Image (cartoon, rainbow, N blue to C red; front, side, top):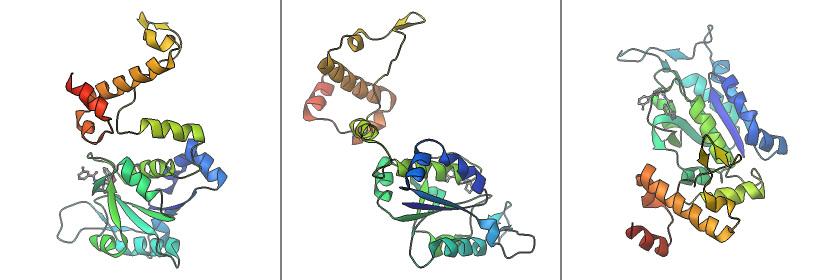
Length: 237
Ligand code: 4G1
């Protein structure tokens, strides 16, 4: 998988090279390129933004430098183009899994008041948001998207990590985790975890996952993968 990011702040994306993604880049499973849109400005002062028609304040990213940067990374092929935008559908694990099947993804990051609408019409296949809050630019959202998609690509996670994702990603929150020491500030690790009885531990963890999802994020219960037995058990609570 190749990710091409069109941005005014390419250095921000360098942080991705740390951790899991850095390892995948090293292995050659993932390729990244960060293209500075400003390098494609034809303006003598390298400007990439201008005042919005109709006034209203703020600045808008001009279409020409973005289009030329896109042409430079697209080459002859037709990559999948995503605009990180508050107007997009919120990113989900399902969407990340789907995008992990693409071969080349181009990600456009906005700044100021966003991009000229015509660039969205001309090159963008879909808009994706990472959530409903105000940010300065699309770079942090692009990094979130790349991290999330990369973890779904074959060979990025080792078999243990993949098993852990698969067993945990059933739409439920994770069960509580504990490590040493057995007592901290007078708080003890639940006895069952020290029992060594694996079947009981699995059952307890599953119950904890369901109960804390119900308590902390009840809206997730709609799409959670529960067995008929678990649904019956829940009715009793
Ligand atoms: C109106 C948040 C504006 C922000 C309403 C999540 C946010 C890109 C994202 C904004 C951005 C809301 C994202 C806002 C983002 C142009 C440049 C858009 C930065 C910009 C809820 C500013 N996921 N925000 N506008 O933050 O790009 O992807």
